[in-house]
Amino acid sequence: MRPPALLALADGTELEGEAVGWWDGRPATGEVVFNTAMTGYQEILTDPSYFGQVVCFTYPHIGNYGVSPDDTESVRRAASGVVVRELTDRPSSWRAGGDLGGFLAERRIPGIAGVDTRRLTRHLRERGALPAAFGPLELGRDAIVAAAAGAVGTDGRDLVGEVTTPSTYRVGDGPLRVVAYDFGVKATMLRLLGRIATVEVVPATTPAALVLASAPDGVLLSNGPGDPAALHWAVETVRGLLGEVPVLGICLGHQLLGAALGGGTFKLGFGHHGANHPVKCLATGQVEITSQNHNYAVADVPGAEVTHVNLNDGVVEGLACRDVPAFGVQYHPEAAPGPHDAGYLFERFRLLMARGS
Image 1 (cartoon, one colour):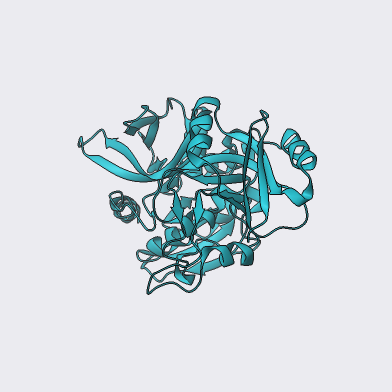
Image 2 (tube, rainbow, N blue to C red; image 1 turned 60 degrees about the vertical axis):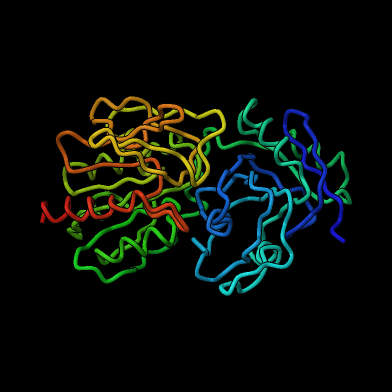
């Protein structure tokens, strides 16, 4: 039997469930967002971009195919918690190396199951992403509610320092040389980039001058957590790179690129989180089904051309510089397990680097 648990939102909403995963004797806190993907729960929960956030899965059955060592996106800190309707105890897949409940305990991720996630999702759509606290009722209802009242969201927070690599390392064996800024980079992103380049992954605070001194063919600005408006130091780094080397920005990297070109960023009501977001390429008219995970978006950027837009709400999903070799996308071309409609963007980056070499 799983112990009874409570999820309390900062606006006073309470939902009951059962405690799963890992606990340290205190209520877990974070900003609750919902994710509409039916698969990929392990990749989502190990994505450092979710640091500081609690993921509510809208799909009712989570854990059906278990977990595999090959599907972990990062060994460092990632999602701060998980909320599900039903957590499967007996997965069925030839790839499974264990069950999701055991994985949560191993990765020290607190969770709550048995929650009416449909009700929670509808509430978040109306109120927006909300800070929350949750935990076993044995911690005390008053303690959980008090923790929710004191919980903070991601607004104004620089969370990159919590997830970036402490030291430089290399991956891949491709013919080009790329420096990847680790703002919370995913393993799949590095694996795909490693097919076209030898990738040197550097801490987020690495100065632009030090990167340029190594004469790379290109620079990747990775995904990551938190509010881009709090990363003034990273924006200055990107400005030091533009015009000196081809640049690709993905997710948070795209936002930092937009800010470096004079654009602004703003917070979406409940963000884009899922594997089924339609994005239109303005150059071709083609619609890509994309994987997304972002609470913030780029406003109009005077120094760039908008290349992709979200068909659900018109948010800028891609931009390209007019006078220097640099472009960015808000969504995830490396998406694992998918969709893979946007995989061509790595080839576009390769060609951009090849023209500059």
